[in-house]
Length: 83
Image 1 (tube, helix red, strand yellow):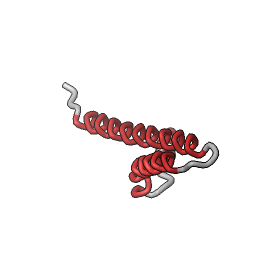
Image 2 (image 1 turned 90 degrees about the vertical axis):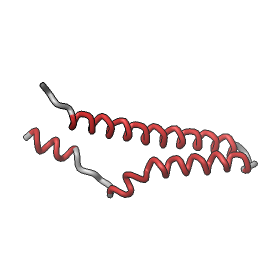
Image 3 (image 1 turned 180 degrees about the vertical axis):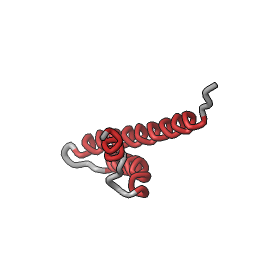
C-alpha cells in the first residue's frame, strides 16, 4: 500500500523537456519584465513590471539551485558505501 502511494507521488504531470526548461523560462520572463520596467511609462506599470521581474528572477534561481543541490546530493547517496 505504501509503495503505491510513493509511486503515485513520483509521477510527473508535465513532460520532462517542459519540466527541465521551467527555471530558464522564469529567468527569461524576469529579465524581460525588468527590462520592460525601464521603458514602460504609464500609471504604475514600471513598479508592477519591476516587482514581477524580480519575483520571477528569484523564483527561477531558487528552482534551478534547488534542483542542482538535490541532484548532487542524490548522486552522492547512490555512491555511498557503508562499511
